[in-house]
Image 1 (cartoon, rainbow over the protein chains, first blue to last red):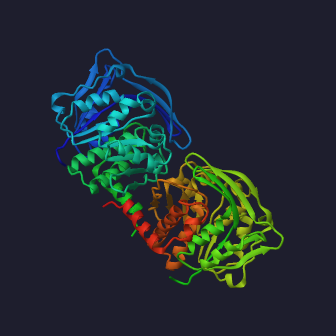
Image 2: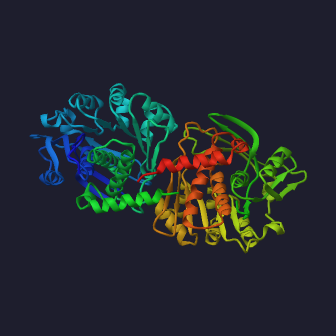
Image 3: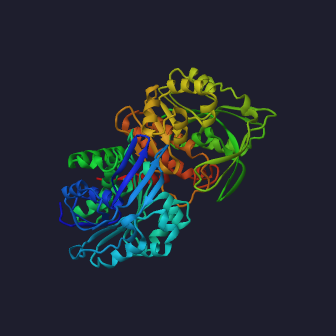
Length: 305
Length: 305
């Protein structure tokens, strides 16, 4: 493993989730958490986020056990941690949000510890694009900058969001969001439009249908999703995908085409594990051997001569 | 090319189609036509269908130019050809049917010419499952029997449809249809259920999201769709996919796993060409070299080491 750390900025949350498989109450969640833990299987991780005093110590201990640097995790005295409640039905592709209590996340201002400012691999998980811009200002040496977003910012802060897009190398976005953002229904054309704004790579996440990495070259990369018979909880799949992708690239240290493709498959692998259990539970005992085995299954699944 | 012919039974139609790219009026269409012409790039084809006296001679000439055996094409004196009218909007994944005039198709009874009865490769395109059963009774030597269907028969004739499914080797079905048929939302589980009824392979067509071939072995095969920036008319994509798949297998003559995977990619290749123009227009000047080139692009698109 290379020593390139991945800097990850985003939400740290307590999630209450209901799916056809069961429920959780205030379990560990948040985009920065899913992506950091996924990345931690491949590279050191530096997290930037905020929690309240209520954030259970066991979660801190878990993140620390994954060798995630918590210098950038602000703990607000007397504050309450961001709480999201949602439910999934049917094909599980879409969450219905039941509650969003921002709490300390409302006033989150990402301030990078000095030790983080030389980070070369930066993932801006889904947060206010104005905050994403402030992070970019603090990482002048970054050689790979990636971002995610959501419909809320596309609708509400499109100017700032487009500015972030212009300044990053990779955009992670789902199929509905890229259509909303560009007004273009055809995904290939929508991705070409986004790439024309600056990013070298646009990675469209399609849930159970896999992901497509649109590249500078004509040749794009298509990845299937892993064919699971049971999905317990889809929360965090996209974040785990992005985290696994960034972690693998940072760990490999070489931004060549072959590694970008491998990174997509590692991202898909991590996402497929995440959804098999609620919260980040599957990551707690996941091994590098299991990751390697499923990566190989992914390869076999698409192999054709 | 092997001399194994593919027997294809299904609708021969005149289609009036409206899409965001334009319209056609009574253009050549029908599941048996799309699949026969797609298959004809790889193997001899025998078609069984029915048309009215109004069916333009130029369409007969076109099918004959593709070396499709028309002995099984009944021409009903004084009859009118099946006419379908539909429109597509938005992401083009779903047609709104504007008119269905069955005409001579209403009383279609597939009678196989004697020369067809020894066919080893049989594709039952989407027609009444009771007729599909009558065809199966006439091809005792078939070594590969495949079928397609649609929501209309799933809802209206599920018993006969399940009997067809029990008697074939391969089921082609789209994602919405397999969920409707099995009552199972998870596609992997729904496919496992269908396979438990008899078919060795269940191939779920997912439109712009590609296709998944679920196999006896644990390892399934995932194929992406070709990332087109423009889709003129999605009509016939699924039929072209199945026809290309069956044609390739018949042409190769060997039902080994590697060939089944190649067949999926050839099917996807033919489907990707179909949708680039209205009706079967793209097939009129399509070459084997173009097919080989796009097949190679498909391979490159999913390659990962």
